[in-house]
Each structure stands twice: as C-alpha cells, then as structure tokens.
Length: 128
Image 1 (tube, rainbow, N blue to C red):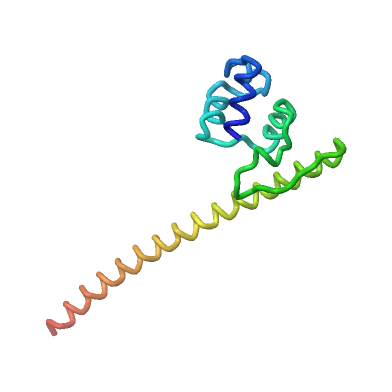
Image 2 (image 1 turned 90 degrees about the horizontal axis):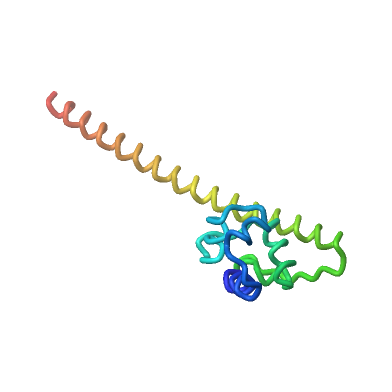
C-alpha cells in the first residue's frame, strides 16, 4: 500500500498536504500511511485505489489479501462493505486477544496474592 501510494504522490507531484486535502484527512495521516506506520481505513483505501487506478485488493495488508474485481459501482460498494466487515473482525480478534492476555495477567496476579496470603496463614497456624 505504501509503495503504490507514494509512487502515485510522486508521479502526480503532490505534496502530502495536497493529498490530505483531497482525501479529507490531516497531513500527519498521509505521512503515516506513506511511511507504513498506520494503514488507512477501507473507505480511504477505496478512494486511494481509484486515485491510483489500482485494484483495492493490491492495497490490502497481506493477511487480508483477497481477490477483488469491480465490474460495477454497486458491486464495488458491496465488496468495500464486506472488506470493512472483514477488517472489523480482525480488530475484534485483536481486542479479544488483548482482553484474554489482560485476563490471564489479572488472574496470575490474583493467584500470586492468594498464594502469598495462604503462606501467611500457614505461618500463623504453624505457631499454634
């Protein structure tokens, strides 16, 4: 995505500010997309694909690569909606994994606290 987008900016001699205005985003966003620091949301990928005259599938991250052809605007819109849902699923999966990791960390912390409390109680009972 970054390479195609950068080449398009260079070819059309567009500054990042000009591209930002054309796409309706801030210049920092364009810089982040161009450098690969962040990826555009699918609605922007669709616009970038049209501007760069490439299939939107070429702009997708490798783990989201799908073959797309858009013979009509209506089909293109449906495919973009499907890809947005796909992206939301990836985000949900990431959030679930983060939540799972946070839950495990929390349970380990609680386990360690209970273990420590148990040892303290055993020490007190040993006195009797």
